[in-house]
Image (tube, rainbow, N blue to C red):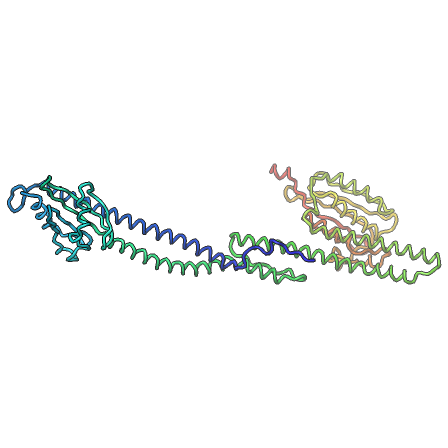
Length: 488
């Protein structure tokens, strides 16, 4: 029975590049629409304000003319309101969207439009009795009314007193201004459409560049196989996408390291365990009924099983050496450490164990790992010597301050190491010539463990030997004198 993850079916099937581009277009469209609406509202409001200002300006000019109160042709005060309107309107030349009308009783006077671009007003107010009645209403002096020529804003200035009274009506038609505003809006709309097309192109390109590392990550993830973890995502820049690529590459590094460690462990185990398994199987297949023969076979099988156990343990140590917590360094008193190592060495074999120079002081090392390495060197020395032979060990500090180092060594009187073997003796599964011909040949992992422990401390393992005169194996570990360094 198969189950379907409900979360797996959620989400959009639209490619991320299109989604990013779509969001960019949506944001750009909203911004452009907001700008167009704002500009249109602003232009319309500005047109209304200018119309009101022109009404006020014309009314102020007429009021200033009235203040003079003198007929320019007679140099006498005006005789009647209709004469005031006649003289004033004769001097005016309204704009294309403006009309000036004088009302004196039943007479309707219009300003001469010869100086204007148009010889006729946008709308013949004098011919519209209803409109004349509305603008003549004594209760209203300003207003706005719709006409066949579009919206009209008007104002009226009254002169004289009843029954002899006149009025100047100032009318401004705003339709042309609205049309000009609409032209601007249409132009902005066309420019905005071009901007949206440009935003589409730029968004598509930008989304492609932003998602390029993600596509590279997808290709690398698809190319990674069980036996090939070497592919990496190319990293460009230092942004968030680059951080994701770096994190993915770091994960691949860890996977490759873990896979390599696992593969080496399996290869090493298969390499070393093949022989004891073959030996055990061969003897068990030939096992007879003779009690003595059976006892001998069981002892041999037990010995091979013990050797297999040691091989697996050594391989596990080498595998754990790849982990960052393999060495846990802490301040360690070297004198006490060497005394403990010498005491534990006594149980390895019937040898004459001698402890020579002992370093006095503290070093920041992993005492347990160092003990493991030195005891391995001691066991190696015991393997190549006979009962009663001398094995010497010692330690000392070399250098001062930040350059101080801790040297620990084990010397034996065995057959020594050939010069050509000194270069590779610390490699895995390497058996020296003496070990290959000895009765206690091991798996060739002991010295590899020693070197691994030294490397984990940031130091090195070394050997000095003269063939036939014994060998000295040792550790060279960094042990900076913190007190001396801080004092300096």
